[in-house]
Length: 159
Image (tube, rainbow, N blue to C red; front, side, top):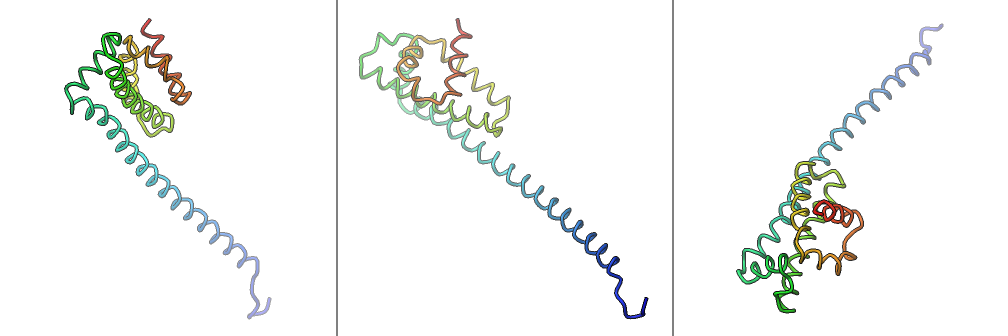
């Protein structure tokens, strides 16, 4: 070997080592980014969960008459006028859409099992009511299949 000659095997090995280090650094960076994205997604889901939870509370607490119609509809829907039933059904719809959103978040893995079980217990509570059964028979088709299956399961638990 001459004094000015390049050892291409050594250069190739060095390049491979640097390439491997680059790949490892890139993987570490991507893992950190994924963790940060997951945390942000969970945070956003938590906000959505809270907003959905508060929607029905706001509706029911803002008007005594609406609150009374909602609970009367659940237990004795036949005692209400058509307009009162429609108003109460709108509240049931808001309530169920909040539950459906929780179901979606749970299915996506962004809502904890504990929080989903709390929501599911609310669905079971609701499903025991005669007015809910009336509502569900008329409006079940507007809900996603996954959520509808949970509601049907909750209705079966009450019998």
